[in-house]
Length: 86
Length: 42
Image 1: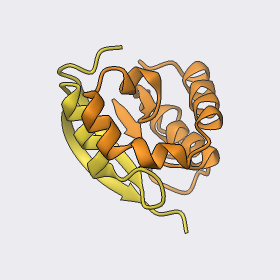
Image 2 (image 1 turned 30 degrees about the horizontal axis):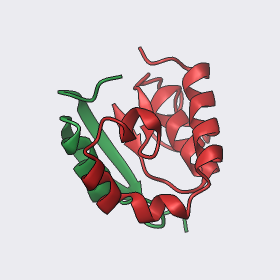
Image 3 (image 1 turned 60 degrees about the horizontal axis):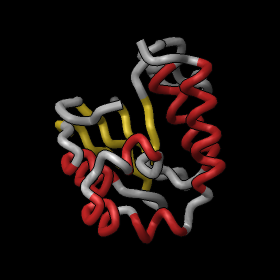
C-alpha cells in the first residue's frame, strides 16, 4: 500500500496515478507500467481513523489545517475508482 | 480497510506531510513501513 502526503491535489493525483495505472507524464520508468497498488492520502479517513489519535495529531494535525483536504480526497478517490487496486 | 500488518510505502512531500510523519502514523496503525521518501515539486 502507498500513503501519500503531498499538499496539492494535482500532485496527489499524479502520484496516485503513477502507482496505480502508470506514470501519466510518460517521462519516468513507470510509464505504461500498471502497479495497481492501493493508494491513500494520509489525511483520508481510511488512514486517520486507524492511526493512534495522539500520533496523528502530533505528526499531521498542523499540516492538515493548511491543506485543501476536500480537493485532495476528491482527486485520489477518482484515481482509485478509475484503477481499482489489484 | 485495515492497516494492521500491511506493508506501506510512505511518499511524503517537502511542502506537505513528510514521509517520516506518514511512517509514524502508519506504524501507529500497525503497518510495516518498507520505504520512506520525500518528493519536491519546486
